[in-house]
Structures are given as structure tokens and as C-alpha cells.
Length: 89
Image (tube, rainbow, N blue to C red; front, side):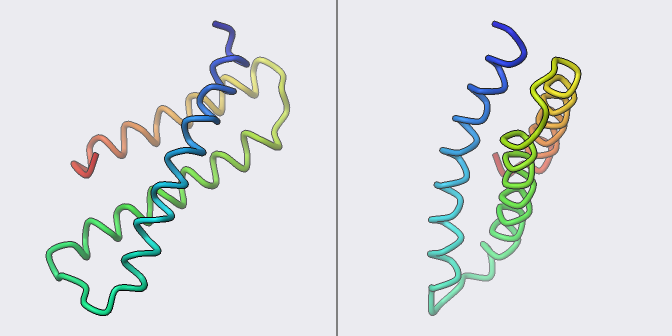
């Protein structure tokens, strides 16, 4: 798989994940009662939602040369490592 193909597949998966995060965040925001024990988890989810949304925008509008694609994929890997170390995912 070429870096460009990998980025395209990553974009697809990120888009799907963002959509699911949007639903969860929306439900949290509209909930009348917000359990205190979930507040930190939702804050973390919102942070990763922002990071992934920003990555997706950059990826979709960025240059398609190999070096640019590889740089974005490295940034995506950093986001994933951060998510993993958060313990949320």
C-alpha cells in the first residue's frame, strides 16, 4: 500500500470515528443530568475529536506529494499514541 492509499484509508476511518464522536458529544451536551464520573472522559473525547477533525481537514486539503502525506501520517500516529496513553480508548 502506498502512503497515499494509506492516507485515503485513514481519512475514511477517521471520518467514521469523528461521526461517532459527534453523536456522543452531542448526547452529552444535551443531557440534563451529566454524571460527574463521565465528565473527564467526555472532556478527553472532545479533545481527541478536535485533534482528529483538525487532522482530517489538513489531510483533505493538503498536498498529495509523498513527503507531505508521510508527515500527516506521522502526525496521525502521534494522535493515536496520545489517545492510547490516555486510557480512554
